[in-house]
Image (tube, rainbow, N blue to C red; front, side, top):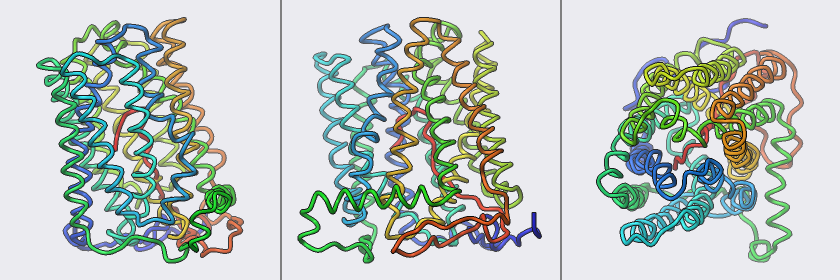
Length: 459
């Protein structure tokens, strides 16, 4: 196992022992504010989109399609987005994506307000929103290390997760359900405004965010072959790094399983837990309570526990939560179990995102992030459809139980396949700079993270 790493270098990400979050640069706080403001709108949608789907149809397969429509663009455009993001200015890419999403959500709000929408229009808008998100998220993962500093990644990701949790899962769902009960178009309107505010805040971040190492020639910019080859470089790097490769495989299992459960959660809440629209919003809020606790515990746990133990426990804990949910008809017990799941999800997110950000060279961040999420998020549409099919044929309980089994498999994969601290690891073969941190091979217990959205629509 080697000697215990010192806190300053533990988990491959340098962690300052003194000082607090306020030491982070102002550009990070502008980024955090933009993420949090738009996160409030996302929180409204966590309850409003499923409720709007149920307003249009009671078919579990169609309802679960909202998750599939939002995540499917990662399969179609993920690698393309990653290749383009590494050629473009990342901040400008984020601004463009948010402007597009402002228009899309505002247009859907108008259709709903005039009662001319339907489930198919909603699914089409969700697919377009997901397409914009592939560009936004790939760019954001490259911006975070720049505005926060690589030595502060765990702290910065914890703050981002904490802010998103409070607004996306805590305040947002209950407010979204209440606004939907007042008028179905209201939460959509607020979400559009949140995107517009995010644009204004991102505009205030100074500097350029183009990678100097991958600036292509004018001819290369126009070459489809060059773009595809550039995107494939991200896949090659991911395949060559064992730590990130294992994390991606486990995240696929977690994403498919969680999407299966969340794809039918609104129906499970109504039919098994006997909750109305407001009760469903409160159920999501209970998950946020656990997520807030997780955002506070993630960094301290990452400093003290081996990454393999921490991630195995997170995946197993989420599996236990879904297994318990499948076995209960009590709304109170269900709320407690979803709070446990929320805690485990955020710990997983902070640890895996920070680990990946620390390992990937800046020139490859967009492409490797896109490749990772093509695998991780690309499975979510399949998970959503799996939940819908099981819910339609076998019932809602088997759909949730299937999620628990997939999360258990993810825990076993991490426990058996993630390298031990001090293990030798073959580094990815690439002509670009090597990973900035090889924490799993230096005798330390790395913590890198990538947020698993668990079938929820989060910017």
